Amino acid sequence: MKTLTSLIVLLVLLVNTSAQAASKQEIDVYVEETLNEFRQHSPAGAKLAARSRGMLVFPKIYKAGFGIGGEYGEGALRIGGQNVAYYSTAAASIGFQLGAQRKAQIILFMTDESLGKFRNSDGWEAGVDGSVAIATLGAGEAIDTNTAQQPIIGFIFSNEGLMFNLNLEGSKFTKIVR
Image (cartoon, rainbow, N blue to C red; front, side):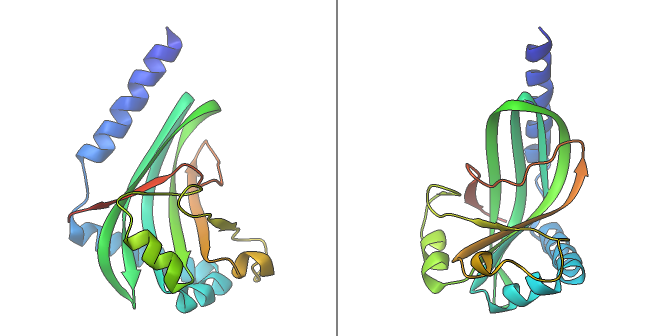
């Protein structure tokens, strides 16, 4: 019975989050704030971002789980310093998990090929349509050389809450109209 109650609460949270979808202007503001925080806390990440062909910025991804979990967020694809398209990210998971969190996520496309493959997909899934190398923040000023040479690099930061998971596998990215 507790699992069923938790599942209902989780579904209500995710439905509520998606029902209160942000406007284009709100996403633009949140993306700028997130990029400023990113530049401030990771000069090495900012240098990589400057070399990227494009980047997906998700300022607020909400995740909750009790055995069964889910997450949802909205963000923008930036190319040449401009938001050119808007996307949502969603994922579900099963396993040992308990809690809720909010996080920010930035995915850098370092090659024209990886960016083109992402933009030409109807729905792109991390780990299936492209492998994302996770870079860690706060572990010094440098980013691992192997990570820095990957075609797609992900950053997860600003974790708030009681759950921690540095994983993008299974996250689905879908274009939205804003």
